[in-house]
Length: 271
Image (cartoon, rainbow, N blue to C red; front, side, top):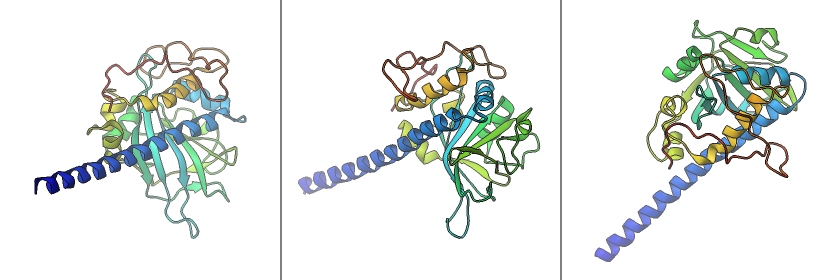
């Protein structure tokens, strides 16, 4: 009898461990895709200089590797996203996990999905995203802007905005309107990725949890937010000056960077 109970408990532990491993793999896949999307959005020509300048002044960023526009062919709309923020020293946090959905997503005519990056320019906008389920266009205290072309898209629309949206589709910047859509935190994903219950605010503001697997994303953010004509990036509002630029790894290509010198968040709670 004891043998049967032991076998049953062992099988349950294996099943639970397998489920947790799959969940962690899914979240890591989202983080990896977010890293690639960040590089693709900010490494193309056209308005990339303006985009990098805004990233250099931002307080946080919400990166959505694939936002789908609803329709008769594509079921549902929205997408999964990660939120990252940086402190006064310029160190970026590990990601918090979000889902976007709800209202009607308006891309340019003919575009069904795109990579979307939302630059959160100040603490007021970051608090609005963190404090509750944030709905685009519903918070009168948060001004929205878009960098790009098409629907609600122009460079001047981004000036003075609290949140600036950048969308990329088919190798070009694309206009996008997200009014009526909401951002909702994914607590199960947070638990899977960090191995314990932790809130988005604890991760991106308090930096109380850190997963080393997110370091490539943090390195890409530092590189792109500081690569402005060889000069250091402007500091985020209310923050101190960022540290030195992370240089490409020897023999590396594309977005590969050294991570050895990447500053860690002040407090670390790894899995």
